[in-house]
Structure formats: structure tokens, C-alpha cells
Amino acid sequence: MTEASAPRRRGRPRGRSDARARIIAAAVDEFGEQGYDGATIRSIAGRAGVDSALVHHYFGTKADLFAEAVGIPLRPDVDVPAIIAGPREEVGERLVRYVLEAFEKPEVQRRGVMLMRTAISSRLTTPVLSGFLSRELIGRIARTLGVPDADLRASLVASQIGGMLLTRYLLRIPPIAAASVDELVARVGPTVQRYLFD
Image (cartoon, rainbow, N blue to C red; front, side):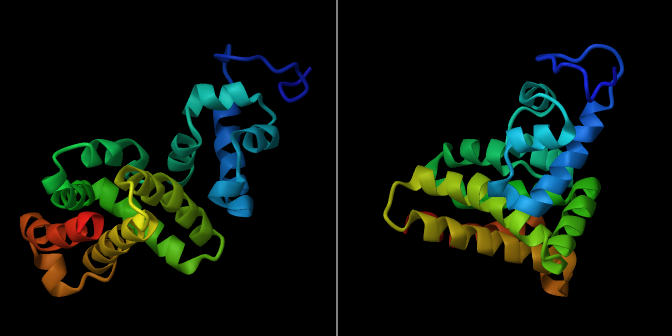
């Protein structure tokens, strides 16, 4: 009896298994075809021929699985809530610093630039990344604001930070690429702060 035809077991897998690799491959296909919002843990598990519990065992949440599948270098779904929960008057600068300090790490920068290039050039990747950011970044920020135009405010924050990353790390426009992290935090942070709270 093969692993695919064997009864599915919940929890931790026993022995050697290629289930983890199959789950990642299934996730790449499912996210590509259905987008971030359309893909589910259940549909990915079905495509991989495993139980949903095994997907949760290996990867936790859908956001965790997405991050693993596409090699996303930041986890806004994990980190941003803590930043937003900090001192209100520092949130803008803290968000900008968080992103820039992460991207200054060579491996994060390499993977982040690759992801940006792919998202810009691929009609399949764009809705996947957009869905992830809408739900896990913009949505989380918006829910903390508690104001009628929260979605617009959070989207403006994403556009400001996304534009900064694009011009600094992908286009490498000289003044922005050459600026220090501290200078960019000082200049961009207040704009992000205004989008969030003013």
C-alpha cells in the first residue's frame, strides 16, 4: 500500500516522508491557481494527498504555509501586531524601521527583491501576494485602527512602504538607495504615522 492510498493519520508523521515537500508543491500550485484568499488548508491538503491536520502540523497557519511556499522574507502577520500595540506616537517610525532593518539583511533582501520582481511581472503571482498583503498586513493594521476609513489608511501605509522598498532595493534610485536607515525612518515614518492616525 502506498502512502497516497494508505489511510491518513492525524498528527505527527512517522518515519521518513516526502509529505512536507508535497504540501509545499501543492501550496505553490493552489496559491497560483486560486490566489491567497481562494486557497484553503483543506484544498492544499487534498492536492498533496494528506490530512489537513498534517498541514497544520508542519506549517501552522495558511500564512505560515504561504511564507514557506514563496519564500517571503517578512512575516507581517506575526510582527506588525506587536508594532501596532507599541507606543502610538512611534508606530509609523517603528513600522518603517522594521521593514528596512529586515531588508538590510542580505538574504532577506535577495529573496524580497526576487519576490517583488515576480509579483510585478507575473499575472499569477500578483494576486497571490496582493491577497496575502491585503489580509495579513493591511487587514491587520485596519482592524487595530477602529475608524471608518481604516482600510484606506492601511492601504496607504502599504503603498508608502512598498514604494520605498521598490525604489531602494529594486530600482536602486541613488538618493534613496544611498540613504541610511535612520534617515529614511526619520523622513518616511512621520508620513506613515499621519496615514495611520491623523
